[in-house]
Length: 189
Image 1 (cartoon, rainbow, N blue to C red):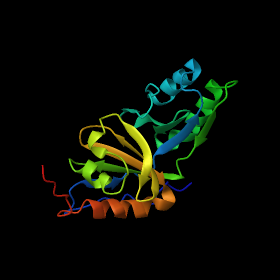
Image 2: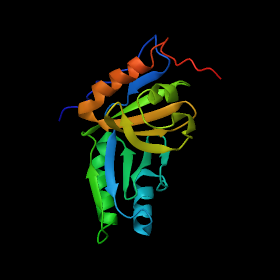
Image 3: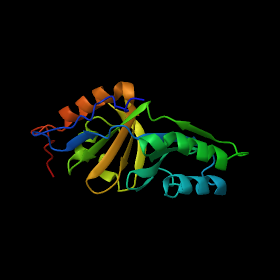
Image 4: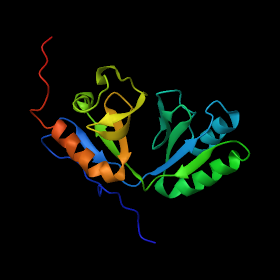
């Protein structure tokens, strides 16, 4: 079996950018739909990715594993690429008899890491969201220049964004243009 590759082929920005933009590469992603208040679901998520089920509009991570709220009945779980199939099996087993859907979507989506103090400004140029009020641990589904995305903030300067892989190159290039040195928005206070 060949090694997995990402659609962005591990692209990363170089000099001349206000932020660092990098393809996360192949990463395990599992869509889990079900009742987030279910004790069985909470236990299965904790066992599967080592974090608690996040509340609405939240993301919880422990290293590269984590869970992001995507909708009232939907989470996006992250694990190692080669563990996604096993995660789906364990979730399905743990949630047997309970209404749910666990699906490996690792090859359907791309994840881009964003790092720097200018991330919110770069995202604000294309998203209809107030990025100035986006606390650490917050997650949001929105559009960035008409591309459906999920965005979450992991720390003061670390963010991630996910989109369908067919839009990954367009999104990456858009982020590069939005964060070029000299493109900062001059605000008068």
